[in-house]
Length: 131
Ligand SMILES: [Zn+2]
Image (cartoon, rainbow, N blue to C red; front, side, top):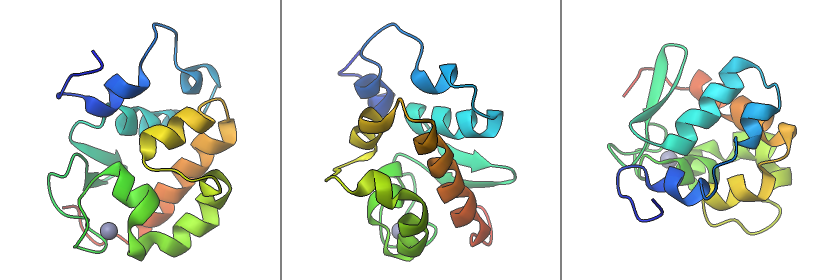
């Protein structure tokens, strides 16, 4: 499963048959839904009536230059820097190459899931229209 191309992020994170921590932490449903979408990384990330592309299907809806994927949004998009600093600084204080590293470093922290959700919720407010 680690070599699948269909769900590459999920395959790298799901290395065991245990229930994922975010499903055991009694998170509010919208937070668990955002994490599930990011982990499966199939088509897009949807919150309420807006969505953004995953897996590079189109360019980043904020900067228009980066690839539309979770790594770009969470770590690299220059347009989202202020929001990233506000919600994710604590989790990005150690070098992080991609979302998979970030997830594996903090997957047992309820605050991690909450701040990922708050980050995207705030980012989505500045999104005028779906891609
Ligand atoms: Zn961008």
